[in-house]
Length: 352
Image (cartoon, rainbow, N blue to C red; front, side, top):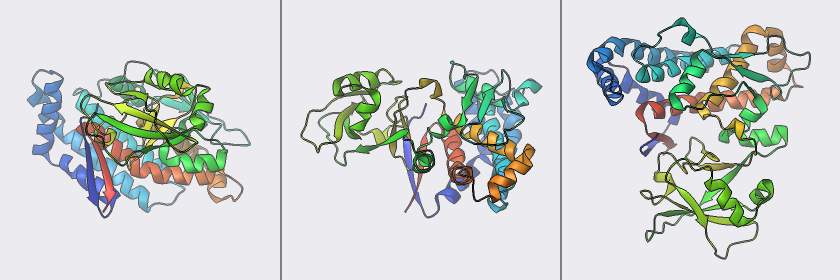
């Protein structure tokens, strides 16, 4: 999906990220960008389609920018709603690069997901769930990324568990571990195309596997040309060591798709994590995770005003800590991963 990794040194990663979006906010550049995208997909009259959609695409981006800027300046009482609409505008911009006739029907303009309409007297964000509909923005976006359909419903605790940046808060509040950090060797072995990586030995306990069986297990989830192998060397106790091989990448940090394995994810700093969950039904694209969680929070904000107020202003709700951290993380990361998707490259905006 991603052809390369670009690390961009800057003083303010968020400002630099949004400044990079200016590339899409002028007609000549946007027309060329859309025409190239349509030609790769072999659409007829790609130049005409690009001319027709350029203005629409630009306004999707500009609208998203305005939603995010307004959210930054707004009170927490309304911020989730603004962020959710900003997400929707960014998703529509990407969809337009894949489907020049979007929206072909009004069905694809729906949310595509629902939540429970009546919340319990005792509300817990982790216990809430989102249900997937047949038609709408999210299922249509998903269909453009992969063939396997989304499941009928997802519990938020399982979705939150998959966000690398949220892991410290997740562990503190829910007293569970779902992601383990991956340490990469600082030295490169140029004699072979491999990356040496280290994991806590407890990963074997979570998987209920021996070292060699574990390597076989994770290789079953490879989605590209990368693969893992054993590395027998003297290392401190409590740690396991593996090699990751790829025919074109010496180091995994150079690969746009990371480890090319469903069990591994990365944060916006380019650091890697291993998912210890045994429920593979929750292997959802991170873009969709952010969208689903923000949908639930925005619906609380919009339709469950009293409960939302209690969460925001109460000192007794642990949800507030999780929600505030999620809003901060999503504000920074979601536009970043959509930008990556648009250009087909990973972009790591890093403080100088």
